[in-house]
Length: 399
Ligand SMILES: *Cc1c(COP(=O)(O)O)cnc(C)c1O
Image 1: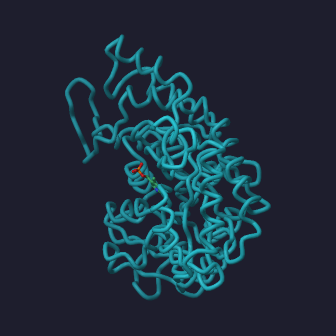
Image 2: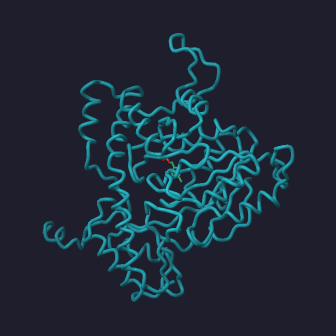
Image 3: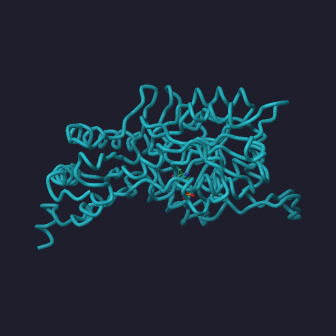
């Protein structure tokens, strides 16, 4: 009975996005166990850092226990302090907003643009010019009176933010640029890796990301002093290895050698995974392009997206069903989908933070749904998702 249903694929649950292990993961993790090097020091931590630096084209990389801690430390070394402000994409997973708060600083939330759903550069320029005053090399938010210190663009869903205008604004207003590249490892902006454009970048290797270490993160930067400071802060700010002297409050944000071993193996697969993800996206685009009331996520001419989390936008009135009704409808057929995140400016957790000219992010939050796109997604599974989606337009017309 099980065999028949497995073959037909009809009753099989299709998850949204799960990890894939098909390379050297077993052998590298076994090497850790065989040698006893399982904890926070070991050759795989060094190898993972070197491989990530090379991959991003950064001088240095510092491994961390997760992406959130990478962001926290990146902001600290970029000079963000208590009561400063950092401009953050409002349409994002919450980690970057929380990381700003860990510094005692405040996010200023920036809207998404409607084409590629990334931070809106026109609105950013307007905020810096009209919402702030700039004198003596210091940028001050006119409404809050706080100093604006950094820009934190989040490359969402595997697609890059339009970095050139952002970098131009950062130069003009002397702001640090901290890239949240957690969702876009392997993507390029104008031919260069995402994470190599700003002053410092953070990555995540959480289980749902394109490659995973179970949990893990990485900071990359060309700034040697910042990298040294990041290593120092992530390792309890130890100033004497023998005497355990500490001159500052540090953090235990180290990645284990065991996790790094997974990371080295996963990074070897990255190019292949990006190719697979892009093929999955292409197949969705070809099959769903004609469905009225449904738009697939688009790729900017200056971008090579990883299509990490393939997402569609619904016009509920035309499609005949809202994104949440479709989610329920597909769930009943064993197909997992997910809405985007509640925009940060609507989050109770971020009360007291300023938001600048919102609108687009709210609409995307209401309209979008991410579809199954694991690296291991089979053609048969994807056909099932496509068929179910096409059929949904004709079934219950519940908006
Ligand atoms: C996953 C993610 C992070 C980091 O998450 P961790 O679970 O702490 O590794 C940060 N920012 C964004 C946008 C993410 O999607």
